[in-house]
Every structure is written in C-alpha cells, then in structure tokens.
Length: 146
Image (cartoon, rainbow, N blue to C red; front, top):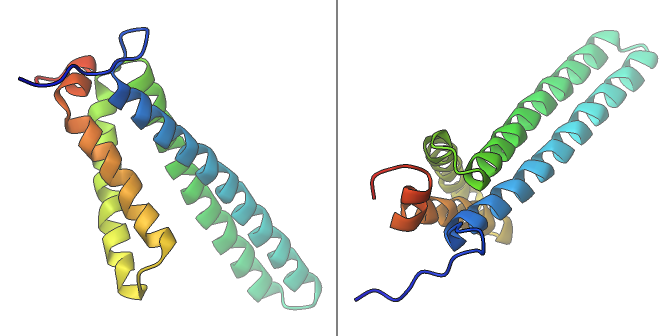
C-alpha cells in the first residue's frame, strides 16, 4: 500500500508545484541572463567599433545578441513549462520532458570540464523535473495515462 500523496489545496499534486517553481525560477534566470548577455555583447561591440575595429565590434555585437536571444528563448520555454504545469495543460508534460532531457544531456556533457556545484545543480534540477513528470499523480494531473 502506498502512502497518501500530498497535494496542494486546489488539487494540484505537490510534484506539479515543485516543477512549476523550478521551471519558473529557471525561466526568469535565463531571461535575465539573456538580456544581460545581449546588452553586454552589443555594448562591447559598439565600444570595439568606436575604437576603429568595426569588423571585430560587429562580430562581437552580433554574437552577443544572437547568444542572448537563444538564452531568452530557453527562458521562455521554461516559463511555458511552468505555466502549462500550473494550469494542468497536457502539452506541458511533453515539452517539459523534451527540454529537461536535452538540458540533462548537455549537463552530463559539461561534466567533462570537471565537477562543480554548478554542474551538479545543472544535472539535479532537470532530473528532479523528469522524476516528478513521471510520477503517476502528475501524469494524471496533466491528462496522461499513469
């Protein structure tokens, strides 16, 4: 016999709340980092261009802005997952699995650079999300067969 599952007051499983919090925090952090990287890349590029190195400045600004847009897009994906799980949307399960597994793969590949607190966190958070997405109560909550 399984122990009773703790649920939030509105009938939302605790696992869904954990997923929403993790993905929401990651989404906001990625948005802020993306804006920062895009701003810094553009600023450094314009400074390099002002010093007479226009080609290098243009490349630096372009790379910074493109990288910033990619990071912002990842942040938007995290926020979409958080919203979808919070509102019990069925598509959130698949999107959460795909994004979390891709992030896990890159995090494990990042271990080649050595183990640090950031690599452990970058593996632990998506692993927690995948675990909770596979729990029967969260799957039922998101309209998937448990």
